[in-house]
Amino acid sequence: MKRPDLVRRSLLQGLALLLLLWGLGTTLVRAQGIELAVLEPQRQDGELTLDFDVRLALPKTVEDAMQRGVPVYFVAEASLYRPRWYWRDERVARVQRSWRVAYQPLTSTWRVGFGGFNQSFQTLGEALAAVSRSSRWKVAELSQLDADAKHYLEFSYRLDSSQLPSPMQLGLGSQAEWVLGVERTLRLD
Image 1 (cartoon, one colour):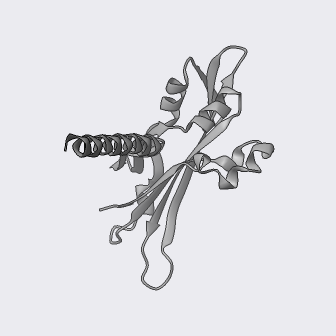
Image 2: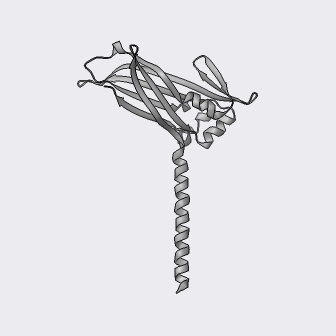
Image 3: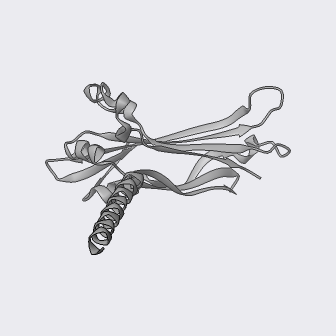
């Protein structure tokens, strides 16, 4: 009588262990990517501005490529639309920002480029923190908005694999690790 209970208990414990390991594995996969923590449009000083903050958790393959000196680009885009019932929605404004993050092996620093400006950081975490947020980003002048219309804002933040070196782009179409991004649509009142 004790033998079947012992076998049953061992099987249940083994099954519980497998489920626990499977759950940990799926948690680790979900932790990689881009999560939008803050997205707030504001009307101030005659402008429509945008504050955003994303949390980046890069996959191991992306981090390995960056450690080898491959520059990686992150792009944020915001488009402001006015709905129309008779045609496609009218795009009132569109803005884009692009950051370049690259490892400098000679100085063991991370370099972040934004426009014509460059800044060095000691760790990858500090460099990613610099490219993952923006405040008071001007999207449009308030004079461009119709007072009677209800506008909406489409926002996206992504890792731009099209700006990677050409040899790396050849096999990236099938690699999900390099497809990172988040999109959100907000109604403006």
